[in-house]
Length: 604
Ligand code: FHN
Image 1 (cartoon, rainbow, N blue to C red):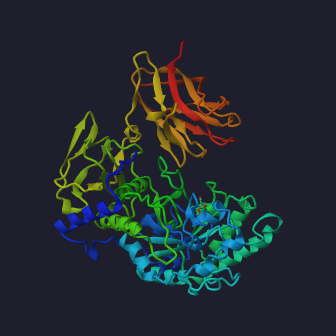
Image 2: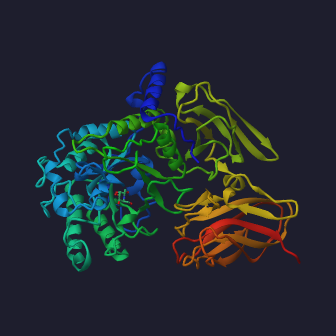
Image 3: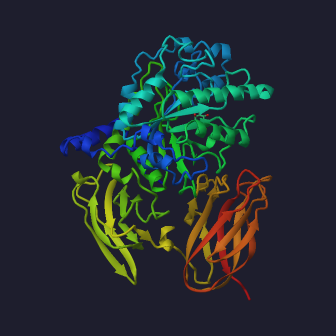
């Protein structure tokens, strides 16, 4: 659970942080800003971006893996009503007002003539993104409403022909991004509520139109970083169309990155996963990934949505995501006048201030060796340096089981003073203890611990404190003690729940480390729940090098828990033993709600 600093609001935190800056040593200089990744031209110039390359290691994704932090922009004619239609607040996200407000096309078409963003300034938007420490920008070219924010040759329902603005803001933004060394990227919706053939039998005609417009975007705006597709859930779209569209995009620009929503969001679609409004419990195995998130509750601008996330909360989210090897795509929803809302700017300034002094601990880093950190914070890694991000010093910062020779430790933000630490060893287990500096950061204090080689962590502690075997010999592996790996599954409690739930992605798995003092033969007892119609998932329970398999039987509801004994496993010797539950299939909506796995001494 991330520490929620709800007592600070964006502006207050911004002011407090500014005070520290003034009291400290003034604003950071350009020299302290982390080096921006290669400008788009260099990425575009990559000729060695063959289809079938591995996104995890391909040169074409280097800027993405390094850049870590991007600006999502949802901007369209939905900013005209801005959440209010015929004097009434329309619930839900602002860019869905046509659907949620049940606005007929003929009525919705009255918005473009009122869309004249005279205050739009591409250079200003790019400066805001750059000052926030963002390295790429993804803007809606066309959202589900079908309105095109660029000068399209394939429709007059676009910003040039249907609004008094008569400029192409995407062209202006593409140029401004390139000048600033920020990757320019497009969001594009497959679903289209305006085009008359975008559903049913006529879909093939719309499909052609869709590809013509995608081609316009990919060939008309210079080197692009990402095509960020969305709205793929419609019944007319399928895996084959997704694969074709992916190939189409990469053929037009070989170094382009395409997200997983080009297909049906399967783990084989596109180049990376796109969890939305949530941060996975752990790294997504074998895939690049990026969490996209709103700063309040809406993607498109809504006049009356003031529920801004505190700056500190956004910084801790960025760190949490980076510690799991992901990227953070944080959204702004500009107004119909062409302005990014002030509270968004205040939050972004606060994040940018933190990144100016701590960016080395985010950009170009890889995931932490821990999946459960033994202190209130996270880690990231870069080469032989372990970055320790401390959210709160209320708990000691003791890294038990960290391996490797410590060369030195230093505060990444030198304004906060010097790092003090000690390294101890007990029965061959090394512990690094870090001490609170004189003036810890209001957000997260980062200590760079430089090792002789890349830091390693004993696997037995990487997954959190081991589960002790009880006196009578059982080992109770409860959901609350599990380490969750993947995108959707997570521990849930309250209302009769104390289980791993939301297990809708069959690639997600859970594990524990058991501290076995009495080896022997054990039965494996699973306690789980599954609603009617959601049984059938097959899974493997691995205990050390042994395993048993199971198949989920529906128990009646997601909170009707039943115990089932699977079979026996042998633990040969005392010590740390990793136990895991890995799905092999998921015919229903979710794998199961898992309450516990209990290893009970088998009666011979
Ligand atoms: O329906 C859209 C929504 O409006 C928004 O664009 C988000 C951002 O990722 N994507 C879809 C919901 O998953």
